[in-house]
Length: 461
Image (cartoon, rainbow, N blue to C red; front, side, top):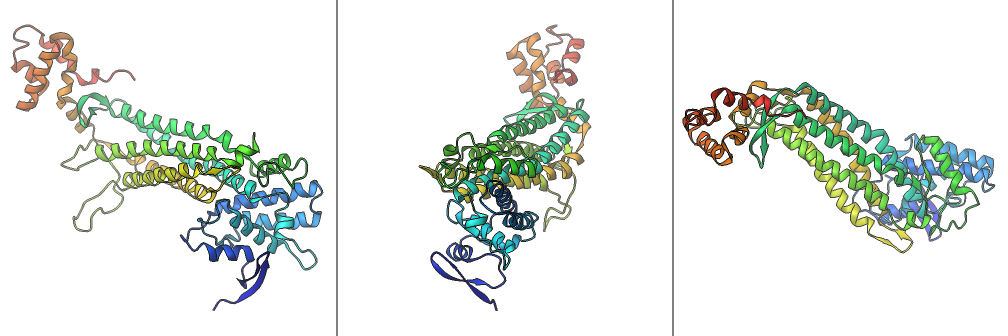
């Protein structure tokens, strides 16, 4: 049976679990928002603690808190950053739109950890000194997102790009049938197709990197509405400098505090870059599924690694599970982006009040995109095997290899050959002979053999 203690805030007394490090405002939020069971991510909580750590140092340097309180707050914040108290942040994601409840949750936990009988540390007066939830919480999102992009997503995307590039080089001479509209087209190499996949990921990396400058801008020091009320001179510059030094990330003061608190366009922009990446991954994953379809009745150009049994009723069946997971992740990211875009439109006057859901969705998108990019690279792409014989058969059987004959016998005659080849189930060369083009001298057999060599149709790209 849970035992309780009595805490109080400006609204009165509250029963709080006896062993909890948090206090009254956190408990009120727990009771007010029993909505989803989803909490802020640990990375987001740690970002909030980074702010509290830096603020304590800046506040001491600027004469707001004494050295003893600075040291105690820093030690407590370091413990939170290290993940030692992740279970002390129980508030639901769907809470007050400014994130005030979670900001106070962090203030209260650090206050409890830092306080001693001879050194009381107040969650508002000391831990939250020179701050407001309205500048702290959006700053914490920027901190958590930029760190996650650099430390998690971008390295995983680099790995995927490299895996695809290796296959592009390995298969640069493997000719197969091109396909447009899901119909046979002129030849292409597997290497060319995989170079296209790799370039999509490279562009995705570039798009994500392009968001970093604006993500690095922090509105700390703007406090309630961006004016900086209750902050000492120099606080904004110093607290951001301290965070940047401690985390090794290029954070800077927001170019305009009013924009940085009233809107979150940089988060919408970042989510948009992730949406494009998700779209790219759907195309890549679906093409891999099609190319590996079979083993008897599909395309069968490549073989995907066998990872697990694919059916509870059909023995021996194996499915393309990682590409399927990739498409599902993309669906989630695209949905997250829709929520982030709507939330980003809700900046009324001087504060955007949809911050927790924006943070949750954006950090989730980064996490699952990074994880699935790594899985796609290591569990699928790296283990792909090309069936070169099958590829060549498909290339040579495509009726579209008639295309080079346009220059010799004209488009309409070439179309007759293609239709005859399909109808009679013969090669383009045989159809050309059947219809008498060589016999009539419209093209000689040596030229016919040369122009129908599929290896000459793939260009130099």
